[in-house]
Amino acid sequence: MKPTLLLLISFLLCTPMYSQIEFNTATSMNWTRNWTNFDPDKTSYPTHDQLIPNFIDTDLVLSSDIVYLMSGHVYVTNGAVLTIEPGTLIRCQTETPTSLVVTKGAKLIAEGNKGYPIVFTSNKSESSRRPGDWGGIIIMGGANVNTPAKVGFIEGDYEPRFSLYGGENYEEETTRLAYLRIEFAGKNNSNGKAINGLSLYALGATSVVKNIMVSYSANDAFEFYGGVVNPSHLISYKTKDDDFDFNLGYIGELSHIMAIRHPFISDTSGSHAVEIDGFDTKKGMISDKYLTAVTVKNATLINLSDHTNYQHTTAAISSNNLAKLKFINSKISGFANVAKFDTSYQSYSEIKNAFTMTTSLCNIHDKHIILKHKGINENQAGSSMILKNNMFTTSFTNVGDLFERPLDQKNPKFTLKEIKGSYAMMQ
Image (cartoon, rainbow, N blue to C red; front, side, top):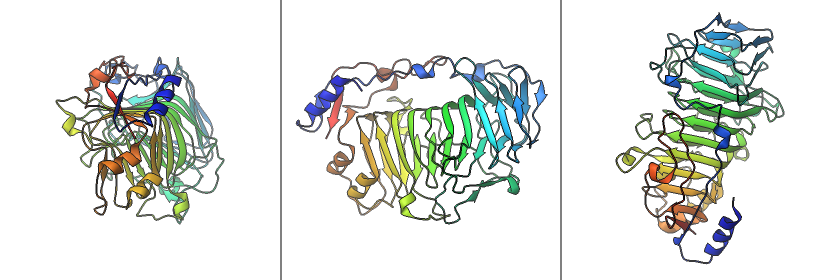
């Protein structure tokens, strides 16, 4: 954060609520350059050369010299290591549910680089690809899960013997992922269970998850089920359901994440940039000491809404079942509300202990927060207690007026414009 902003915040602590100021939170987005693709439907990908086997039980390297086809579920088992070279392209069959399933004890090493990202995408031709063309990537580890059983089985029509995750291997290096794109995933299994773009089950603390883009997923983009990994530089682009979903006692810190939503793209149940559950009510929990607890730094959560369509948006954040969440130095724009809290939170002080947001900018068009518990009276004082020391636009601002080139189809840019006198401080 710029020193001038820190001085402004210190000064405003002594001024009345909603003091008018000039505010600039331009954060460098250079980390998105060169390896991302915001228009993958128009990208011409070469046809495949080779089929990936459906069972990989010995170490295997996928070469960047070959274009691969993944057809049906591919299981990495028996402690095998699947290594994917930088620049490798994997086309994914769309006729049947197709996913990469990395079982507990096995490992996926998919480390591309900025010039040569690894790409998983639909096998359809350009201009015909759609969300949910194929399944997604599922990785299972042996780290902590906050359920009485301490382990679980992934949902879907997968081989039961290859579906176990969880344990007590806190330090495990479950996977190494970098500069990876996952496009048009989220196809339902044959039993109707939805698959996420990237599902991470019980990953250990030494795992690497960074510089990953999930675009046009028909379900969640990223979902974390337990585990203790600290990801960074993640992008969810025009996902149908939630962009970042956390459950089963996941504990971690995410830095430099981006969710770009559209008001007309949403699941019927309602979708959010962040959905977090302290525990799974169906599975139960070991203890409330191990509730899902997430810290997010330098997030950009944008719904591409304006005054003609903003009524179709929901809260940016949905917090449930006593989950704990911290947001620091972030931007939330284009949503109806900053956050909504389910009935497990029974007072403003309880919410304040579970949820904090500091030095962030919010551009919303409705109430600051939504409270589902009927015993809490929604009021400005309560919202101020929870969201103090954050900036709000003085009135709802169209995405095109607030950010640079947010609607550019090929090369969007999501840094803030400098609009003097358009922000106010809540305290």
